Length: 164
Image 1 (cartoon, helix red, strand yellow):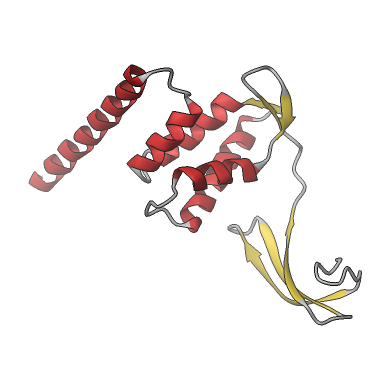
Image 2 (tube, helix red, strand yellow):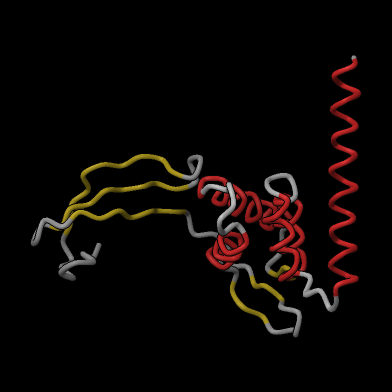
């Protein structure tokens, strides 16, 4: 493994442990030339998945794009990085469970929103505003009304459970 500090090709593993619920191995390494310590991750190579964009173009699936989008939507919100990583992992698992080599960007966005709606309302709305590309205030207001109705339904269910 090449040292990111001095570019030397010789490093030794100091520590290894499972990461991402056993789906990866996290390794701490030390460069044998300069002593710089760095972390690497080893994952099984999965079959590449192509994402079909709205305009019909195809690009390779990149979990980091989902992660960045959620981070942007969750800015200054009480959503921590572990939650974001868990969401990204769940979305990727759902995509791979569908099977096949191609998935639409709309389906990926729907998967993210299905999870975000239970994590943080504001993060959900921010993500939805980019994903759904609201054309006007009416479309945005409809999304908000749906979210409000959903939350009121949850509150009513909680009250019923308390009475039992």
